Amino acid sequence: MKARERTAARPVDTRPVRLEGRRQKWTARARTLAWLLLVAALAVAPFVAGSYRTLLLTEILIFGLFASSFNLLFGYTGLLSFGHAAYFAGGAYASALIMVEAELPLPAGILAGLVGGALLAALFGVFCVRVNEIYFSLLTLAFGMLVYTVVFQAREVTGGSDGFNLYELGSVSVAGRELLLGHPQVFYFVTLVTVVLGVALLERVGSSPFGQVLRAIRENSERVDFLGIPVRRYRYKAFVIAGAMAGLAGGLIAPFLRVAHPQMSHWTTSAEVVLGTILGGEALFLGPAVGTGVLIWLESLVTGRTVYWPLVMGVILLVLVLFLPGGILGTLTRTYRRVRGSGR
Amino acid sequence: MRSPALLETAGLTKHFGELYAVDAVDLAIREGETTAVIGPNGAGKTTLFNLVTRRMRADRGRVRFRGTDITTATPHAVARMGLVRTFQVSSVFPGLSVQQNLLTAVLARTGRSGVSTQSLERERESLERVQELLVRLDLRDDANVACDELAHGTRRRVEVGMSLALEPRLLLLDEPTAGMGTSERQATVELLSELARRGGTTLVLTEHDVDLVMNFARRIVVMHQGGIIADGTPEEIVEDIEVRRAYLGDSR
Image 1 (cartoon, helix red, strand yellow):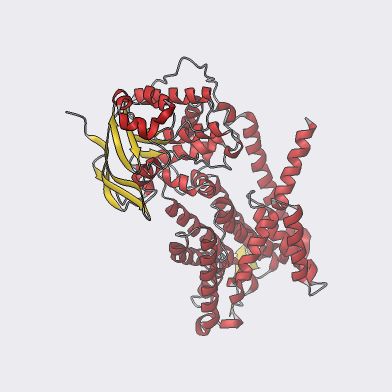
Image 2 (spheres, rainbow over the protein chains, first blue to last red; image 1 turned 90 degrees about the vertical axis):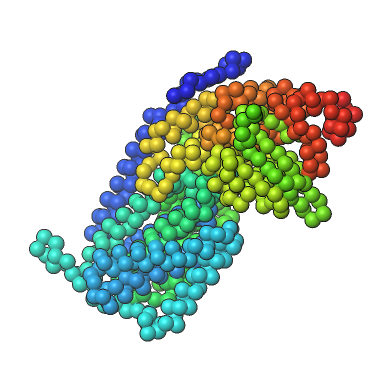
């Protein structure tokens, strides 16, 4: 290593900067512990929740993965996709087709969802990552509606507006007992394992050097380019990973609902994760999943009592924009920091 | 024999409508030859930088860097070859901490940023390099401060730090001391002088402060209305009457 020369005139502070001080290590441990607690709570939940709540929780988990995949593009890379449902639906149809036409078991269907979402994203991504900001949003929206139109019209393959139905999920034998995969609690655990793996992958990728470059691209893509990093290629990779994870969520939703439906690719489905992400807060990793979960939970509460769900949604949006900048998690974190800060 | 040119432009031209911002510029920069490009506002200094680093497309002419034609290369390819620049308005990552800014540049240099599930904290070598840069640029106290909360001059140091992290062969600095206070300016000049002395990186800068470049640069190129009107050692330039008229004016 070269010896460091230093200008004599100015006294320079050479104490090493602590990147991994004790507090950071503690924070890292606390984070790991929080993750484990969350997963443990989710694993216990179906035993105390009853069938209806277990089904609701399954849906929340699936959409949580979907929203987290969306946030790799939005929160990390700064790309607002308005057509992320295309890859979700791509995954749903891929898994339904594989399970019905090829008669392969559930794990193959789920995996097919991932592959389907990835392939679709690999195709459309070529065009989408070339453009910026509003043009990116519009192009992703256009491709999303293209997928919607295709699955709606291609009746022979997709079942059109009826959707593509699947009925039998089969069973697995665990410790000598035959478990029906279609059983709410069994399918819940299939979902939990898949979602935890998918979300963990997204979290790891986001915390890696690759994720660091994505954040830099969000902040100032021109600077990244002039550092010698091919921005477009990084955006493309993020796009495909996000598509693959949306597809994985889709690979769960079709067997869960026993149908792959055009509505899954509609722009309103894309808007649901956009809204959920803003509700939860895009700056925190779990924000989008929490926000989307809250949205699904509220919807289940409201639709049981009134048909005016869109109205309630509008009010939520209004409150959010006016009073909770940074979303639920963002506001909570800010409040926590303020309380802790004033305590000192 | 003079050493071969690191950077070479031939007939480089860029016009915006009727205005020729850069007009048939032939310029060769040799290794280790600290050069200042001076001239009044609108003389074409920044446009020249933009053309060379491929931020803008040239209308005519060629650019060669280390013997390779880079006239149609992409900006990231040019940077990857070792031709790095800073911007007139500091270009940093505003929402990221100083550390993260520097780390991004270090990762760009080492190329260790492919898709992986490896935690950033495991990148020990890159993090050590960040530490070195923090010390060298006197940015330790601001290591965890977001760049958009920094004073103007400090932000400029961050950008210089990012450029140094890339270990460039040729570094183009667009008014590196603009907006800095006197002491900060002095510190930056010392840092750049050290860099020039150490070798490995050749510096070309644009600057408004003529006194500063007279002491610092070995060669001065004077631009006016898109063309080069004088080129020589500081002593030669001071004597150049045309320059006095065009740039130094009556303030001397």
